[in-house]
Image (cartoon, rainbow, N blue to C red; front, side, top):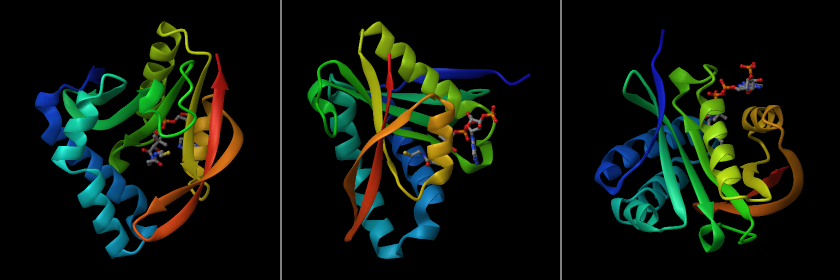
Length: 172
Ligand SMILES: CC(C)(COP(=O)(O)OP(=O)(O)OC[C@H]1O[C@@H](n2cnc3c(N)ncnc32)[C@H](O)[C@@H]1OP(=O)(O)O)[C@@H](O)C(=O)NCCC(=O)NCCS
């Protein structure tokens, strides 16, 4: 039996967070983007400085998903002004939810999603929302399975490339 856990990430684990963030992002999008755009994104968005800033933001939280103490995925949520858009005091954003390729399809994504839902309910948020790349059909089916529905679209910039994100929400 696998021993699974969802653990809040502390600033002391910033290097571990950088490593899982870069690996999961690379595995998810390297085949669909130019090497230059990927490199730029991995370097800038997942720098120790930027991740430390986010970990120190009282309105953002990161959680690791562990199997037998090995980190195989993570979640980033935002409240209030830390949200990338909307910035609604009554909402909670899932900014990132990533599982290593090797461990996908083993309900670890659902475990991280359940954590976000629990935190939203504890905060008495009225809805949970997120943006997902329109071509990420796998993640879109995952979110639909979690009960989320599409409500809008917005532009997401990856390197020099502008891509369309679908916004999805779950009313609580
Ligand atoms: C999206 C993601 C987080 C889902 O995590 P996961 O651990 O693979 O998903 P789970 O095993 O918890 O799957 C939960 C449900 O989602 C659905 N699902 C999962 N993978 C699916 C796929 N490839 N196609 C369709 N539905 C899928 C299934 O219905 C599954 O339910 P089931 O086990 O009852 O069949 C994970 O696949 C991932 O990290 N993907 C790459 C990164 C990414 O795209 N993140 C989202 C960015 S917005």
